[in-house]
Amino acid sequence: MTPDVVQNETLRIAVRRRGAEVTSIRDAAGTEYLWQGDPRVWEGQSPVLFPIVGRLAGDAYTHAGNRYSLPQHGFARRKEFALLERSDQHLTYALVPDVETRAAYPFAFALEISYRLLGGSVAVAYRVSNPGETALPFSIGGHPAFSCAWRPGDLLEDFSLTFDRPEQADTFLVRDGLIDLDETRPVLAGERTLPLTKTLFDQNALVFGGLASSAVTLASRRHPNRVTVRFPGFPYLGIWSKPGAPFVCIEPWHGHADPTGRAPGGSLETKPGIVILKPGGSFSCEWQASIEA
Image 1 (cartoon, rainbow, N blue to C red):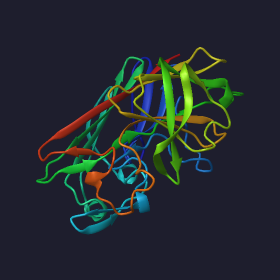
Image 2: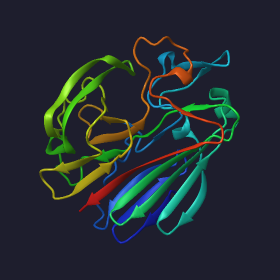
Image 3: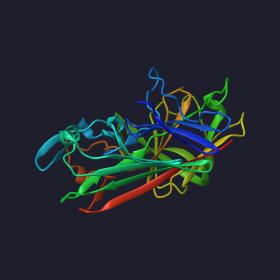
């Protein structure tokens, strides 16, 4: 199916209904800021992570005495969403349970994802509702992959990430897709800027909790262009790329992967980082990507 497109005088975005995933962010000059999903490297572009972020130990959990399997980052990124609302500069998509999702996740939920153009920014909003009669445990997050090849000849090491505040930031270590909450590695020691290098992700993603910053800017020493991701209210931030690949993912998360040492098949309700939504309740969060060309 052809992606849905909205644009204003500054930006043009395209979103496909499979996964409600944005596939293009271009400025008025035609510069593409989103990774274009080469399957030989990584086919994703900006998947939505729901109802879990990261992996479960053993890729499984237990609920009401039954064992269920859930793949890394959940199922939303592989599901066909319905287009709920559309205007000149706004798109909203919806996902509700079906036979396939209930087999893996037996909870009542409604997930809405909206994209709004606000001048030179794209606002990405998530709304999770619980229409059921029991608590809804979930995590949700973004996984946007921003291109580090804005012009011919660009190299990953031309780019850097600059936080809006100085950071004393250690990353949790990622082991087989799980997070070691007891062991960290220092990344920033009072600095704001993190250079991108070919070896930065050799030990997998950087996973931060408790950052002072609520925004980070991707920039190249070769260009005046900037991409700023604002993530107020998100307790975790992941930064990841395939080693040496020409993109970087800046990932605002509510939740994270299971910790190392957690027994496979534990309940979602007791999973560290999980959000618990009461019956009849709703949960909303939003991040933005702002382009300076």
